[in-house]
Image (cartoon, rainbow, N blue to C red; front, side):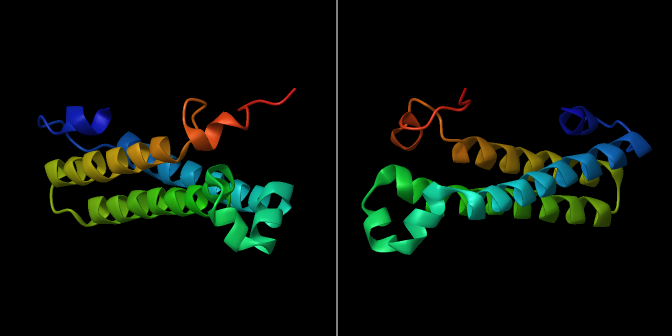
Amino acid sequence: MRAFVGLRGKPWTQLDNRLGVIFTSVLDLNLLIGLLLFFLSDLTTGALKDLGAAMGNDSLRFFAIEHWLIMLVAVVLAHVGWARAKKAPDDRGKFKQVAIFFTLALLVVLAAIPWPFLAAGAERPWIRL
């Protein structure tokens, strides 16, 4: 949100730097936790043992291949945007890079979530009690 407000001529501040580092760091941490869960999950390890069969099942394909690849794209987008923002010559350029790439990263993250109304997410609840 600050990036879009900053496009109207607001100066780039230390808070903007901190928020950019926090955003990319949270995505990095999410990726690390996700990779750990990926290799500990019975679902994905089973799917990787017979990848051909997993490709025929929407839910298995999503969790074994699509989800982590899409999330990796989101992390890359955030880091590219942050690197470009740091190299931008002026404050407006910094805000523009952050607005474009962080928004794209957020949209990609939303696309990778196994929403309950999609085929891939219908079989697995978000919270298991």
